[in-house]
Amino acid sequence: MAQAGADAAGTRRGRGLGLAHRRAGGGLRPAAVAVMRARRLSYGFTQRADTGMAEIKFTDAEKASIVAKLQGYFNDELNQQIGRFDAEFLIDFISEEIGGYYYNRGLYDAQTLVAAKLEAVGDELLQLERRTDFSR
Picture 1 (cartoon, rainbow, N blue to C red):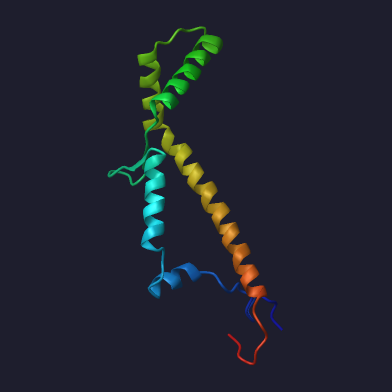
Picture 2 (spheres, rainbow, N blue to C red):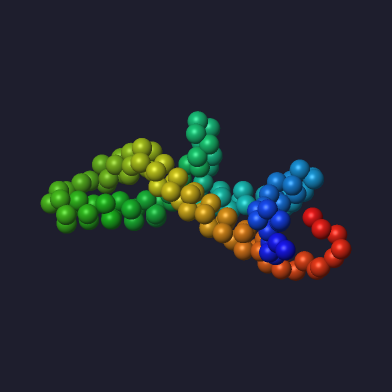
């Protein structure tokens, strides 16, 4: 007898429900999509046409805080003074040239987290199945 959540061959059931749901005409409601887009814009995310990666724009207060931290680091650790303009230029360079590595790592971490959560939900849904004469 197969275990709950697995078929006779021992493979997991329940994966791909999201794709099947979308193929059947389901998906996110337009209101949910609008809310997600509004949140992305409120956090300063815009889509870059060249890479598809979200471009991050900092508020003036956030940028001032980052500049102060960078200036403090240069002063304390490197015994160098760096002006505001140079610090902002360095922040822009790091964001454009190195930020993609951090962005991708965040995506991978988020993907792992979401996959684990979806697997847990799938397992919980399978536990709700009732025994019937019909087998899948």
